[in-house]
Image 1 (spheres, rainbow, N blue to C red):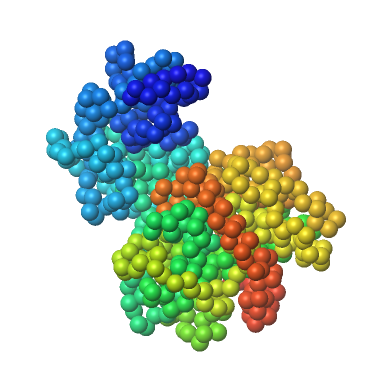
Image 2 (spheres, rainbow, N blue to C red):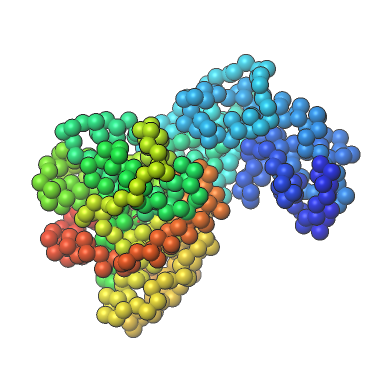
Length: 568
Ligand code: HC0
């Protein structure tokens, strides 16, 4: 341990602790814009400077380790002068059109400027000469709002190992973007949106579909249905001041009804359906018909990744469409028929914790109903903006239930929103189908939690089934390397693109950090435990769907509507 004095308060910390961390320990929050623990520790923004007694220059507290006997001042006139100057320089190069910015009131630059007390900016506002990049279906990149903190670069490189965006040029010309200034759509970007979650300003954000949805809702000729992904209900409350992980299912449903959606359905229903299809596909492959390990295919960022980086492995992917897309295909066929509505008049909207889902919905493969199966995808954040635009007090909403039948689901469908959830849901069903016996312990704790790669061996009938779960692309890549090198012999693999799974998706409320992810995970399992039915094959609406319409899992109709393939 070393002892250091910060603003006259003594604190003992481990050797190697930064001044920033040591200060936090005694309740002093030093402002910073570029720091991201263990991901971006580069001292770039110079907003966190402090004065160390005896040192000639000011030190960036996020990268300066404490020394024994060190005396630090965090609010001396010299420190305050430097912070103001550094921030004014940043602002001089920033498009501070705050009232119309997507991050207004949730912007770290704005927040730090307020905390530091910026009143006048002595440097004329310079316009970026780099245009906005709106080339992908999912993301917008606005260099005029970028403060070059490099958090996005580090997340893309270290957490996702994609390296789609890098610093280009030098000095005043520096810009963050794909190599050679190419458009994001031509880069290796997998559209996961993890960069959006760490951007301190409005330089990276989702391509909004709010106006499209308002206009559909305002069109009396249209029947507008909505599905909500599993991970929305444990996060949407954060946008209205609730604690992360609070389960707000009933209020979410009520809010969607108030907005004017004709039917409020649940992606959890088609998550249960996915288990029926994917479980059957797994059993088929286990009998030698198809490649093992079977890999889940519901996370669109992961699909983008495997298509770009491991095209030779595409035949391992499950042919199941994601629950979002199964829902879309059924909304304009099964549901349309049942409700007696012309599918041309149905507008199908989904609320997703994910930005890559916007891309997925627009894929040419996703039109098996004869129309674009899912018309518009809104992120959790976009839905919150709509609720605010409508002046709805979220906290005063009653708890309402989803509409039947596409809103009926089990706990197994719900846990899809957490890393390991698809695997756990599949095991709950596959075990019972194979053995014909009831599972005694339906909680598969081995595949839960935030460890990067989780493994388990589960006895199913006469076989040992070896499974692995990875979340975040760096972990997925490590797993893929193990498989392609022959060092692993798994039967079934779940991969989710975003750390924590969908609860940590790129469309979720900001901040989304480790602590928040843990709370949302807890919310998901709390929700599962509270459900009456917790296994997908018990879902009565799914059973009815097979009886009335699909026939059987992997049957002719399922094949046409619920499955797809990705060509190398
Ligand atoms: Fe997910 Fe999904 S669980 S990808 O993570 O499988 O986005 O929440 O909606 O489709 O169900 C996201 C979340 C979904 C899908 C489901 C899957």
